[in-house]
Structures are given as structure tokens and as C-alpha cells.
Image (cartoon, rainbow, N blue to C red; front, top):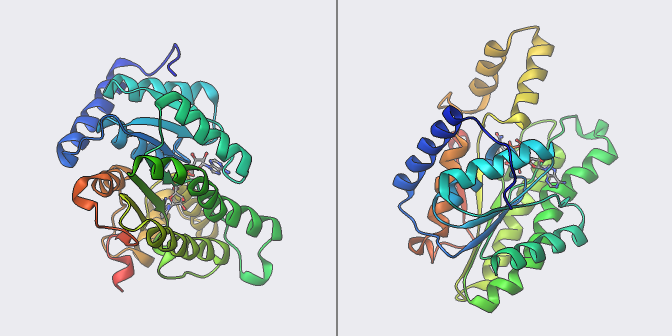
Length: 288
Ligand code: NAD
């Protein structure tokens, strides 16, 4: 689905250069494959969607946002890759909407070969003060949403005898931090879900893995930088240094493109026997 309007030429050239870089780095070929990336209107999911399209896969974007901006994203990715890019506004917390998104991808692209469960949200509060509605929303988005997607897409993968399920967990799927009870629970949970699906699909051409990023500078993390800045009465730069310094030994953000490249590896033939694994990409955070 491609509509009128879109990014200016300089911006498109910049984005296309990034895309070509991805192609060179990944050297993978996903032509003829179809992918859904949940939560891909922003941040990490968008980086993954661009990487998959650059590698030749048809991509269904998903997530919230301004319809005009989402249209521009579709157009931008198509301009760089020549790939058909769809969009579903499904709320991943609603099983019927997730099933409809999978149907839509199947109708548009003929299959769903790659499912990246990436949609996620965060809220920070001590456990005894954690609002019930925030707990429910985080578990529904970060964990149940992935279950709904796998449940709907797996039969299509089984039919073809090929599939890749990639769940975006977090370093918080491996270690904990204070005030993140719901997030840490959901991210530990999604690693367990990935392992169960790996066992249930082992030897059938389908793999299921989790990726565990450290800090990536996206709107989700910018909110946490803003909270540090407000609490410490410091500027954005000082708050960013504090955020990285507390947890991530590299003192550098992970890029969405880096995660896109890891997804391409997990989709490649070289990763056919990589299943049930959790891949850290966290600047050394979980090594401590
Ligand atoms: P982001 O806020 O930039 O993007 C979140 C995306 O999810 C958006 O597209 C949003 O529209 C979508 N979304 C939210 N709720 C949804 C719902 N109910 N249905 C459909 N889409 C929904 O965040 P991000 O940082 O890119 O995070 C993406 C994933 O990566 C999340 O699962 C997050 O937990 C995980 N992660 C992020 C970091 C980080 O440092 N940014 C680190 C580790 C893991």
C-alpha cells in the first residue's frame, strides 16, 4: 500500500544510504518472504522493518501514530527498497485485531514468514505504588501481544515449513532494575515464551528467538531521560550521560540499525539451528 506525499529528496537519499549499508552488512536475501513487525511506526521496530525491506522481504508495518506520517514511512521504505510495504493499525493487546493483521498480511503478500514481536511500552514506579492499569497494559502489550501474534501466524509458517519468530525482549529480560516490575516481568516472560515456541517448532524449519537490547535512543527511552533531567534539574546531555553511565558500560546507545542487522542474521539460513536463544545487544550491560 503506497500513497501520495512523502519525504523530501535529501532525506530519502540519506535513508537510502543507510539501507544500502544494511544490505552490505547483512548480505542476506529475503526476497519472496513476508514479514510483520509490530510497533514499527517508531524506534527499534522501524529500524527492523527497514532492514527486512532492504533485504527483499515484504513488510507489514504496525503501530500507533499520525496516518500521514505512517504513509510517509511506507513511501520512504518503498522508495529505498522497491518493496511493497503494508500497514495495519492493529492494537496488539486485542487478539481479534492481531488475527486480522495476520490475515491482512497473508492476503497482501501471500504468507507470513517472519513475525517480529516488538511493540512495547514502559512505566516506572515502585512495586507497591505501581498503578494496576499500567501493570495490565504493559503485560498486555509486551507479553500477551506476542502470544496473540505467534498464535495467529504460526499455522501459516507450519504450512510452508519455514518461519522466523523474533521477540524483542530487553536486557530487562535477563536482569532487573528498580521501579520496573511490570516491564521486567513482561520481558522475562517473553524469553520463556520464545523458548516454548522453539521447542514446539524444533526441526520444522521454524525458529523462535529473543533479542535483548540495552539502551537504544528511542521515544520510549527519551521519556526516561526527560524524567532524570526533571528530577536532577539537569539538561538533556547530562541526563543522557547519567542514564548510560548507570547501566551500559560502553556509554553508547545501541542503534536500531544494529538490531535490524541481528534480525537479518536470525532470518538467514546460517541461523537455521539458532532457536530458543536470547541474544544480548547491550554494550556490556548484562555482563556485569
Ligand atoms: P517506541 O516507543 O519508539 O516504539 C514503540 C512502538 O510500539 C511504537 O510503534 C508504538 O506505536 C507501538 N505500540 C505501542 N503499543 C502498541 C499496541 N498496543 N499495539 C500496537 N503497537 C503498539 O519504543 P522502542 O524503544 O522502539 O521499543 C520497541 C521495543 O523494544 C519494545 O518492546 C521495548 O520494550 C524494546 N526495548 C527497547 C529498548 C530501548 O532502549 N529503547 C531497550 C530494550 C528493549
